Length: 592
Image (cartoon, rainbow, N blue to C red):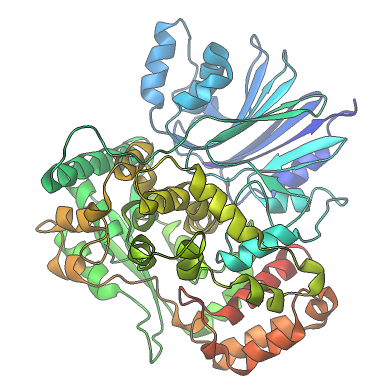
């Protein structure tokens, strides 16, 4: 796991070494163990390393093969690299290191750009072919690893986070992308690639790679497509349960084996993370460390799930760590957490992951986390509503999912950011593209390949990597995702959702965990906004900088401030918090 960056010049000038160093300084938290850089005009690479596989200097980056004239920077983990290494050795390749970085380098030398299709794991890759004068930027199938870029007529910059680009280029266009803003306030902070909320920064799409020539010409290629068709052979419920058990166990096991350091688990107390613990124990993992976080209760909602995580930790005899965060520690740390977000996030659990990661990083360098299970296996309450709905067109989706309808969006923001209903059209196009048997299959496929990328997946990456902690997400293993996509809705929706996972868990996990109702990561103070949290949001939204920026319609802001608890989204998020979160992110990253 690492932070990567680079500059490709189009105007014949030399790359700026000082610029690369500035970018690397903004990536140091992602890679606290070491750093490196290289220049092969017109290209320069920078790298910050978090040493997980092959801890020696032989695996240092940037990695260069002088004979082939190819250089590589890479962030992530390739889980099938031992198999690829053997294939490449049989083809005559010799290795100096034992890790996955050199496998990518030699795979490119052997197979060219098509090597990306052979990689299984989470990755963001920058690879310069000096003979072809071509830069390859690639991102994994599920978008687990981020990859941002900014292009002008003179140069292209890329990095693992936006901060590295923002603070490297004084001329960067940091004005707001109105289409992205519409996405953000409709899809609870999701802005699908290639857009970001900033006009001057874009991101590589999941399951895609870009080829950028030294003349600035860019081509984009998609190397994986998720289909959702039923298998030819008839499968019983028990067949599905066994198939999911086997595939999930493989996903969990390879995410603990492919590491030269200990691996822990973020244990929320839900069925997803509890299954990870149980499967690791089943595989014989000893001395497993687990970690849970909780917050103060609100009268309407409990702030922790410790009773469930404790039961799992006791059943599997893990070395369990609890972090209880009182409200008086949340507000002082919120700006800090937002300064580490590559893009604005509205999820209540962002600060929870940030604070938990600080504690976890002192114990382990790698953790497994349960993100993705709800999207892959249909765990949220809106999925059955969409499945049974007979509403026409995009309303079948938007009436259950959008935070704001288009009319309310127009009421929310200043007139200079008004657009057509671009999010509805985008979502309809995405749903129409999926090769699927049923409507729910389309919804889940779009969620897994697009929406989840910029909500829980990005949140976990940003908040863990802010402390040099690598998070691995077995539920987004490609083989498991493809298996679930072929599964009929009756294996997902019954029993409150995630039916097949619950059947798999019976007799394997504590009954209290299996039988509990679906819970959402609790941080009540950011949902039921009152007291010092309301004062905090009011200060953010009414400060001089915010007024001068004029992002929001002042009448709408005032309405929410007067009765914040009356205005929740369809998914039960605070609309006031959404406004404050974007403004806080802007103040921490653009106006600082």
